[in-house]
Each structure stands twice: as structure tokens, then as C-alpha cells.
Length: 125
Image (cartoon, rainbow, N blue to C red; front, side, top):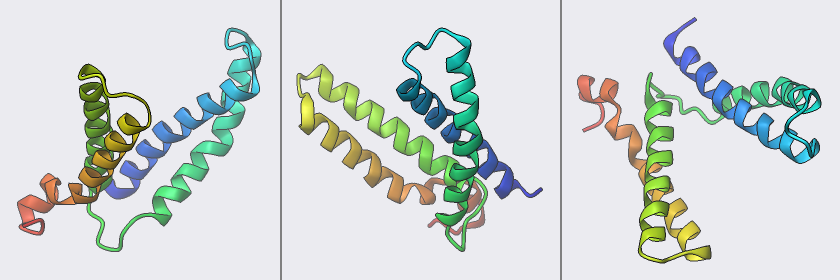
């Protein structure tokens, strides 16, 4: 198994697990029992392969190891940071969501240039 596939599997497990917990929370109202755990496992059986397929489909032809990790970590870090900053200065609601998601997407779209693998080969410059 090559490193690009390992990266895809790791992110698929994270995204699929997150989606499975959300789906189980929507379908099973009591999150304390064994029924909820069964709902999470059942949803994970569907969500993890779908997220792997999505990451495979969305991959660029010139993808390098670490591209997806740099993109997603940048997206999450910038979005959460902007949301916290805007909450600290009293901006909430739609404007907070719009600005934080927009800033996260802007950073996400430029993040491949920050991949250390690309930079070491001179591809990102």
C-alpha cells in the first residue's frame, strides 16, 4: 500500500467516523445506550467507504503525499481560528459562519503550496 493510499484511508476513517456519529445522533435519540453504539457502527459501515470514494474521486492527477493532510488541517485550523476570533469581538450569526468558512476555503485552496514534500522538491514555488 503506497503512502497516498494510507493518507486517504486515515482521512476516510476520520471523516466517516464523524459522519457516522452525526447520523447516529440524528437517528437514535438516546446517545447513552447500546442502540446508539450499534447505530454508529452501522452508519460507519456506510460512511467510511463513501468518504474513501469521495477522497479518491476528488484527488488531483498530480497529488503528492501530504497534500490532503495539509489542505484539511489548514481548512480546519483557519475556520476554527476565524470563528473564535469573530466570536471574541462580538460578531456572530450568519456573518461569522460566512467569513470563517470563506477564509477556511481560501486557505484550503492555496494549501498545496505549503506541503513540505512539494517544497523539498521545488514544486510548490
